[in-house]
Every structure is written in C-alpha cells, then in structure tokens.
Image (tube, rainbow over all chains, first blue to last red; front, top):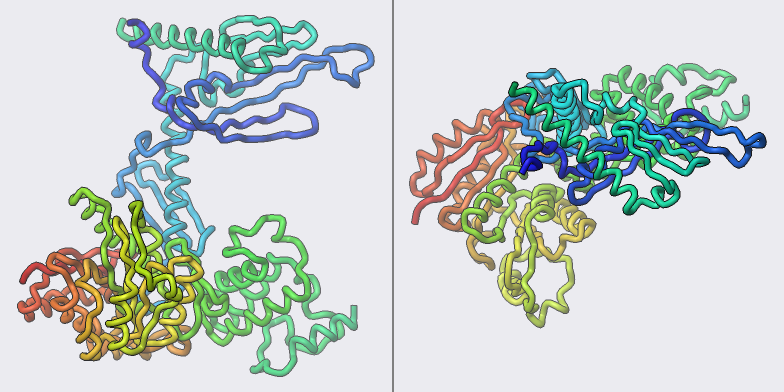
Length: 231
Length: 380
C-alpha cells in the first residue's frame, strides 16, 4: 500500500535518448541511442551520471590501475500528453508579403520562426522547402525545448538532499564505479556493492538487482519527502 | 593559372550572354582568373547573392542558396551536409550553377529553374507556364483534411469522400489530399475485368467519350477509398498533374480531365455521381492588378491561372453556380481567395438563393489575411 503513495515520474512511460560522453582520452568520444519500449524511462533513469571504470589496460606494463570516466545522460522524449501548448501563446513568423499575398506573390522563402510568448523561447526552421513542413519541425523543436525546461523545474523542486538525482544535477555526480581488478561494481548512491563484474556487464539479473535496489531507495526518498512536506 | 583564367572567361562571355553588366567579378578582361577563390558552396552563394542584389533580383540570398544546394543534390542549403559547405566544387557544378543563375537573372522563378518544388512535404515537378503552388495553399489542404477527419469521426466510419478539384495546375492540392487521406481496402474487393487492360494514364479531351469509358473503368472496390477528380482547362497542367501523380504513385486514385469548366457543355454528361467536396485555388487576381504582378509571375506563369476578371470573382462564381449540379446535399466547397473576397462572396451568395449555398466559415492564412472560404450546400 505504501508503494502506491510513491509518485511516479511523469515521463516514466516515455521513450528516451541515451547519451554517452567519454571523460578523457581518445577513441569514440560521444554516442547516443534512442531507446523505446514499455516504461523505458522508468528502467533507465537511474543510469544517468558519471560511471567510473578502474582497470589495468593491456598496454600497462607495471600493472597500475587506470581510472577513466564516462558520463551518461538520460533524456526523456516528450509525448503529446506531457506537454500541452496553447496556440494562443505562440507567435509564428513567416516571410510576410506586402499587399494581397497568395497568387500575387512568388516566394521561395519558407523559413518559419516560432516564439513561445510566455517564456520567450524561440525555435526556427528553414530546412525544408515546404513552409508547412518547416512549421511542423519548428514546433517539434519548440516542444522539446519547453519540455526540458519544464522537467528541470520539476526536478529542482525536490529537495537537494536526495541521493538519487535525476536530471542535470545528477549528471555530474559520480554514481558508479566498475573495478575490474577487484571484480566488483559499486553504486555510490546507495552504497551497494555487487561482485562478479563480468556477469553484471552482461546485463540480466545482477543489473536488475541493482536497478531494483536503486528504485526502492528512490521510492523511499520520495516518501520521506512527501511525509516531511506535510509536517 | 593564366590559361585557366582565360578558359573560364571564354566560358563566361560565350554566346547567349546578354547585357553589359556581368557582376563585379567579370567587369574587365584581366589575365588572372576572375573566379579565383570562389570555389566552395559558401563562397558561391555569397558571390551570386551579390550578383542578384546588384541586378535587383528579389530574394537574392534565397535564390542563390537554392540553386547551389540543388546542384549539390540537396533541397535546401540548410540541409546540406556541413562538410560540403567548404569543399571545392567541380567545374561542371560551377557551370551548372552559372547556367541556372543566368536564368534567375532573367527573373525566372526559382521553382521553374530547379524544375521542382515542395508542397505539403511532397516533391512536385514544376514546368512553366503551369502555376506554381503558393505556401498559403498548404493551409487550404490542411483545412480540408481537418474537415474530412471531423466528418468521418461524426459518422463513425473512415471518410472516403469523392473530391473534385477545379484548376489542378501541377496537381498540388489533389495529390497532397490523396497522399494524406485514408485508402483502406476491405478484403474481397474485385476489379472489373476491363480494368486490367486499362493503362494508368487517364485523361480525356472529349466529354462524350469519357461518359462511356468511365462507366466501364471505374474500379469497383468495397470499403474506404478516397478519390479525386482533377480538372484543368490547360493541357500542360493535365500533363504535369499526370506526371506528378505517377511520380507519387497516386495515378490509380486520381482522374485527371482536360476540361474548361466555364464552358456549358462540359457538365452536361456527368459520368460520376455528385461530389462530397469541391476544392479549388481558382484564379482570383483582380484584372487591374495583373500588371502590378512581379516579372517572375507576369513573364512565366499562365495568366489564365491568375486573372479572375474585374473583381477576381469570375471563376469563383462559376464554381459556386455549379453546386446544384455537382455537389451532394450538405456537401462542401473549399476555396482559396483574395482577402477582399469573403465579403464579395457573401453578398453574391445572398443574391443567389437558388443555389442553396451558405458561407459557413472564413479562415485566415499565416499572415492573418482572410484567405479561405468554406461554403456548404443545404437544400433540395
């Protein structure tokens, strides 16, 4: 019953984009993947943050342990329901022909600019020849911008004391260390260590266990927040 | 370097180049190559923008961007891969850009220069003098689609309206409607035997002939099936609409008929039943405004696609007068018009109660001008 009190994120059911950026060093520096599926965001949201890897590279002759980091960002995609924009709040700018327009004018300027009046957020598009298509693309961009602003606001409302942070605050936090020589992985937010790193890296039950523990802790923190607000 | 310069100069000052001004780059016969350093996409756009501006060509930057992008295989300059912006172009590409740009210097509309343009996301071939679709008209199509969706929602079954477009031009309205209207087919539908022999192009010039032809060839399909009949009085438009229909693989759902709808006999033999919808972007320019139109329009587009007579109402009133013969009861007419027309149409309809037509809505375009009319038939 207590679990029912836990508020779910509004984006729990959304698809998401996973972005991975390397800390230092060469090779592949940045990659992103689009992930969809049932409650994709809910399962993936705890992966955001800095993952630290400690290992002895093959090229290392003296057996020293090297540490490198990888930053992961989980960005939810807004759906129609998540974000409702009132058309009256928008100003749509297109090339304005003088006079009667329409048949009187030949134009190839199909750039569109949309201004969201309440927030001042602007989005433009001139990628397409069709003005309608440019308008649609500009709207999509605008929705994404407004949505990420909205999410940041929501997240910032929560108490800073939370250990499990989702959003830009969490992105720079070191959340997990993968120690290859000692064959263990530690999540620093809940201070949980799992052994058998190889199996963990395969995904499956060990990863699920960790995600489950994180979820439980996050639920606990939400409940504490709710309770302390009422007091 | 010198030889290259001379060759380029020879190309530029070859036969067919009229006028003494050739832009700042070629103002004198110098031993150095006049186009030295102008070899990347960005530099060329900059160069030709300058040339167009000097010659008073409107939308100078847009024109040069579209031409350069087109030669590099992209629809817009924005959508070009950034890597291509600074890469040097081949001499063939440079020559192509020069040729296309020289047409722009003759005030040819960009859409005709490129031979294609987009409408509602569809890519359509453009050929002078067939009328170039305007961006406003995209909103007309949107409105029609909304209405169809609303109506079929109310009725409880997917809409399969029979639509007539008057004055199809390049086919923009008809084809964008078809591409977005449902086309479900129930299983077990069967073709009439003759259909197998029927070729896909279907256009007719003899109104008597197609009465018989269509009765045999109209496919008997069960289920939801939106169909469009597109008519135009110009053969060039019929041919271009057909070409665009084939490009978009919509030729099986559109009937393209060469017909002058202002001629009385056109409508005496109607091989099809009454329409659910009539849609049109009829010529609506006031006759006295015709000479004020830009050279792009005056010199290249068919005046018959623009000139609506004294008050721009000639074709509009013709279409409205056809309603009793062509439109189902509670069928609709959607028109694009001049911003001065809503009032004129309203009073005209009041003077013709015999048509049983009502102006039910006026919609504005993206510039806030009253542009689109929804007229409904309600009567015997």
